[in-house]
Amino acid sequence: MASPEVQREDLSAAVGARRELGSDSEPEVVEAFLDRVGTAIDARVDQRLAEQGATKRRSPSRGTVPLALGSMGLGIAATGASSGLDDGEPVAIIIWLVIGAINIAHALRS
Image 1: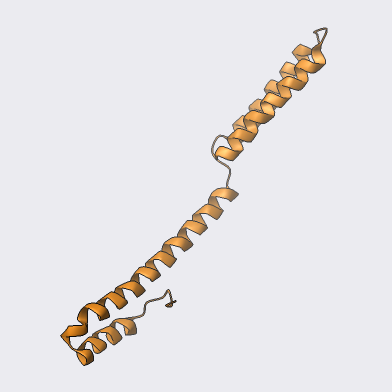
Image 2: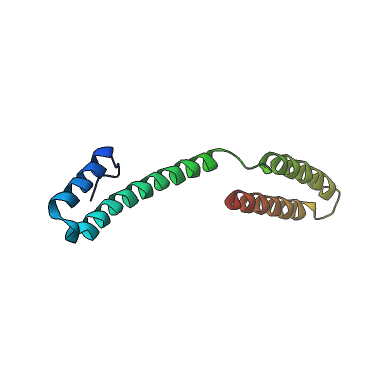
């Protein structure tokens, strides 16, 4: 596979090859040079996408902190409210499971 970097000398070499081989070989020389350029562009795009993906994974989305704090506040309040019920413990467990599922879904979506 060709090197992903295209140097100025590569263009000079392509022009020199075209001169040596004549105009009959021009399409092949141009195609080979454009393949090298395309490979270099693809490598740069892949690198930038990988960098953006790593940045996106490291930084939390805008709604993560408010969602986490709101979930804790609602969970605590719901647990307190369910403690007054006769069967409050299963209600509190269900509430916390739902809150956890919502937070996990948000994290996977981000």
